Image (cartoon, rainbow, N blue to C red):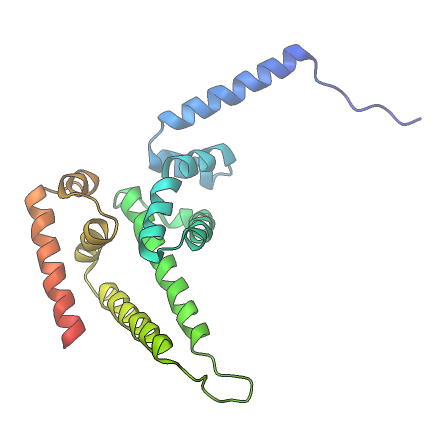
Length: 204
């Protein structure tokens, strides 16, 4: 005779729900590094807390770089997949938000490179597709964008981070300074140097 599965009585269910709520509240009060350590030990609730805390900023950065909401949503999910795989590599040597930002930018750049390669595929008979005037203009824009992305990737880490936060993500120097633990003057100075170096990289 098949035994019936054990059921949870209402009192046990209430205790379980309360424990889950307490765990969620506890996670929300932890800093990013502590949450990441818990997540790396297999605590899925801790990773969910990280996602809730940062997914909007990641999505907004993807959207600003891609100008496409569907692509931005897909890339946001990919960023958190990569974060889950690479969270053991975060050592706390920089702010988690900075580390996640770099991970996001790298994922977007890789996506754009893959997209560019796909666009350059030839036709089935081996011939390069015929490009109309409007298509040619679009291709030039893509090439210019890729050139800019490559130049940005060659910037020193500090310059690149501040350039992307200010000129791409739209943050103010006061926000950047607070996020990175810098003075506002340092943020402005490094942005100026980043722009000058970009100019040299693009026109060398």
